Length: 434
Image (cartoon, rainbow, N blue to C red; front, side, top):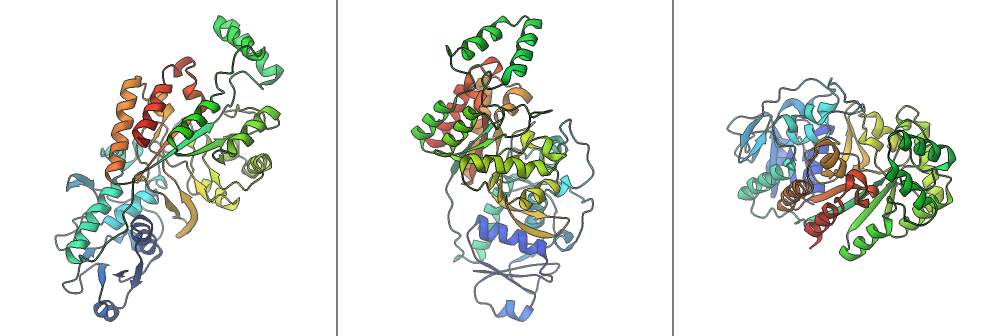
C-alpha cells in the first residue's frame, strides 16, 4: 500500500490518485492530511502538497486538484525525459511537472468544458486539443508519465512493485448499416435506384438487383468473415448496433426487420454487443432508452455498453444520460478526424463529472484508431494506413496498454471506396495477435 499525504483530500485528488495507483498500477492507496500519521508510517509514502514536510518523496502540487469549477488553465507545454509535459513545478519536486494534475486534466477532458467551436457534427474538434496542438495526440502519454513516476518512487522505495500489465487488443465494430441493399423497403430502394439512374451508376443498379434476387451476397453482409477472423485469432470483439428510427444521420436497417434481428441475435452469441445511440437521441434523450430496450428485446440480456453514433460526446450531458439508463461502459472516447488518444491514455478509466465534482461509475474505454479516420478524413493509401496503425500499436505495446480499434462491417466489403481495406483490417489483427 502507498500512503499519500496532502493538505486537502479533495475529490479530484482521490480520483486521480486512485486512477493511477489502483486502476493503472493495481496498488492500494490511502490518503491522510495528518502530518503525524504520515511521518510515523513505515512503508511506501509520498507527499503531494505546496511544500515538503521534510526529506520525504515530495511532489509539488498545482492548484488544479484543489479547485472546484472550471476555468482557463495556463498550459505551458515543455519537454522532459523525451515527452511533453505541462503544469511545471519547481526543482525540489520529485518530477518537474505535476503528473497528477496533468493526468486529471486529460482524463476529465477539462478542455472540452471550456469554450470552443464545434465541428459540423457538433463535436469537440481534435485540433482544439492540447495533445494535437503540442504533438502528443498519437502517444498514450499518461502511460509514459506513469512509467516515469513508478521509477522515481522505486528509487526511494525499492519495495514498491506494481502489478505488471500485458498488452491487450480489443476489436470493435460499429454497425451503422447492416446491409447495403437488403431490408431497405420499397421507398428507400426506389429512391436509391432513381439516384443511381440520375448519376448514371449502372453498376450500382445491377449489383442491387443481383442481391435482391438472391444471386449475389449483400456487400455489407461481412459478418461471417468477421467472425471467422475472430475465431482464427481469438481476440475480444464488441459490436455496436444502430437501432434508431430512420432519420437525418440515422439511416440504418429498421429494427423491426426479422432478418436484421436474426443477425443481431446471432452476433450476440459469438461476441459482446452494445448500443449505438442514434444522432436523434442527442436532441431527444427519450430515444436512447427506447433504442436500448429494442436491443435488449432482441438479445434477451441487459445492454450495458455504448458507443455514440458519429462519436458525438457533449460533456457532461452525454455521459450523464448513459448513466441514467444503466450503461456502465462507453466506447466513444476518440476522435473521428484524427487517430490517437483523446484522453491521453489507452487504458480504461471512470468518468469524472467536473460539474458535479464526483467520480461516476461509467467506465470509459478509449480507442486509438478508426477506419473512417484513415480513409475518409486523412485519405491515406492502404500502405500508409497500415504503417500508421503499426506505429500506434507499437506505442501501446511499449507501455503494455490496450489497443482498441474501431471498424465498420462495410470496411471489409471491398466495395466502393473501401476497395482493398480488408487487407488493412487483417494486417491490424496480425500485428495485434501474432
